[in-house]
Amino acid sequence: MKIVAISAGLSAPSSTRLLADQLAEAAVRELDLAGERVELEVIELRPLAHALADNLTTGFPSGDLAEAIDTVAGADALIAVTPVFTASYSGLFKTFFDVLDKDLLAGVPVQIAATAGTARHSLVLDHAVRPLFAYLRAVVLPTGVFAASEDFGSTAGGELAQRVARAGKELADHLLGTTRRSAPRDEFADPVPFDELLRGA
Image: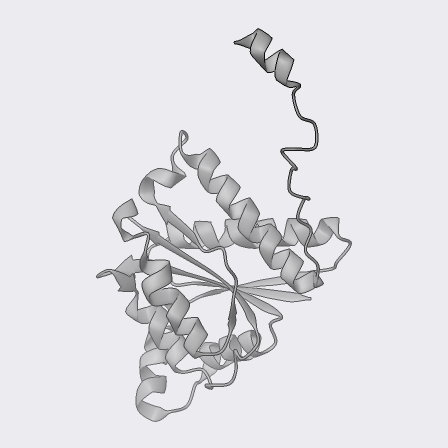
């Protein structure tokens, strides 16, 4: 089973790559627990920027870009993470998916995620990233993970870790074809007697 994580971060190191790594590790951990052998590859788009521009003008990928496209073609699932630029995905992120064959991602499960300096951009996943992959006929998983700068701090890191863990489990479950959700709690299964409620009042 092969998972490919795509990071469109522009700095080195970048919070976008950090989030991509966390999501990939969470999914691999869940699959390992299920006894599934996983191959993980990460594609950094920053070094491919010139090749992507050339591809737009020539219509043909070359070198590392061609290799990256082949890697995506062989993936069982994608993790796609973009920084937020001008209230949407970055141009580099969009360009990579522009040069893919229009049918390449059909039916492929995609875990979407984004990073930004402020939580005010958190809706970018639903108004920009999710529609992009829906158009490409990918299977966009329900849980998207957004991380603002403060989410990587020591106080808020626990909440981000919970979202990442939930997303990793969701991707693993999809790949395994299972739904490992706990049964909902029946609030009427063990009622408190009325006289006991009265005594408590």
